[in-house]
Length: 455
Ligand code: AMP
Image 1: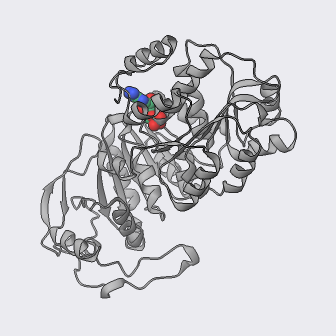
Image 2: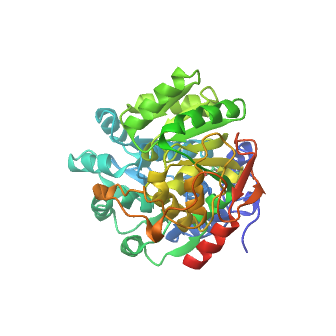
Image 3: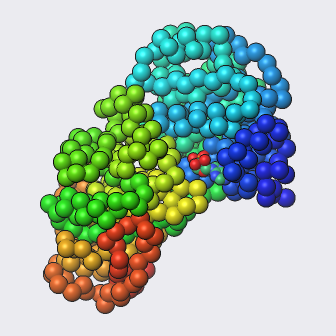
């Protein structure tokens, strides 16, 4: 039977005490299903994304095992290896081990790029219990003979889908090849595409599988709206939204490029708002300082790129603004997952210009949801809204890859600025304090009809 409280789980008392201190009483579904399996020592494949509580799902049973079978780790090695794609995720996981293992004695170190190698070499020289690492830098250390994986007893491969998206497959395979045969392996991914399945089969032995949150779960939890708008007006709308959001919680603004994030951040600051950017061009200490400030609530606005924001887990984010539409639909789900964390609700608003319309349509297809349109702002692009409502791609849509302009499907045109075509029905928006100008939104029923026919 699935446990309904942490008390029912066979976890060591010091772990339960740490959980109680965190006010965790009920295991999340991934925890309730995975922890008993992992405590039995079985391999696991978990289909779950960040925000489901999967970090505790794997770190609790691992800490439990370390506690129950204390052993000195081998030199230059570790007993546990957690492999994760980004520095932010690695830091987050490391912090979770500290939080849950607060009343246990264990050693731990982090290995990722962008910082000096020598302190990492020194930290693992005598062996550690837990090593949390990103693939590229770990492989460098292995090649230089500074890290040896022969002591690994527990191996966690986290966010495998992201790992593959980021081109880490070869590195991951090399790392896996260096692990001992006898170990317990845990494999987590948000999706189970064929390449991921194949990798899982290579790594895991007779795994139990647990599937929790299909990507759309987060999308359902977060109140979403789209503002159809011209590219040139986006900043003005942003300032209006930021003004309305003041005092209502933390905001993350997503920008597709590092350069865009920087420019935007400067522009926001010059309008009297306090914002800082995190992206790959900033040094690790700078990123950490910014994140820490944001988490503490001392910084109200964070401007981020997709990669930099992976693993950012801040409970009080009530508003996510997509100043541009990501060209990969899955990135949208990850972006909006930065709000609505751990059962809380949040609001995500996306600014879509005619050039981005095609990407936006991809997103609605992926999440199988029609995102309500916020037409109640001064920059509303009625022509685009009208096309969208009728399921017609804007003829201005472009694809980034190759820069090929795609002609509008289905003839485009029509609509014109003015009343929205498609018999739009006014709808009370599901804002929850995070948003601002989202008082009323309208999802065109005509559009929904059209969509159903075309899907
Ligand atoms: P994760 O999916 O591991 O990134 O966790 C998402 C968030 O949920 C983190 O802020 C955790 O601290 C929180 N969390 C994890 N498990 C629980 C739980 N059982 N009860 C309450 N919060 C939790």
